[in-house]
Length: 133
Image 1 (spheres, rainbow, N blue to C red):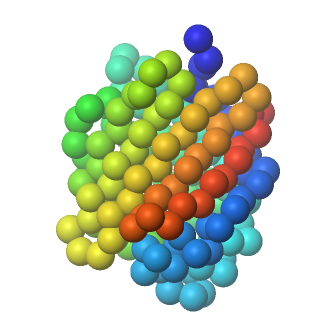
Image 2: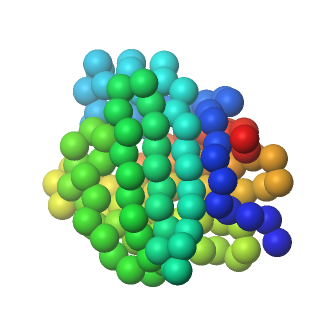
């Protein structure tokens, strides 16, 4: 079984600006988002997961339990009800349901060397590949 916990650095990004545009992210934030190389850290203790995303601008941290709804304010300011679930042994699915604006889905697939995240909003997808540290 592949470990999900770990630290990952963005290596490659496809169609991310178009995805952010579909979400309704403003042009300045899109430019910053497209140029940043985030580090993502996933850890788990006693069934509670922590998803920490660090960029040069901001660090965010989400704590969640699989299958339990949490309140999330996204980097672009959307308030969402978010649920994380596990698909199979190596896919972490994050479903954001926005109270205002667009909802999005993120599927993170883990291998021994990478985390591949596919972001989807209204049928517009972005693929972001992170290298395991």
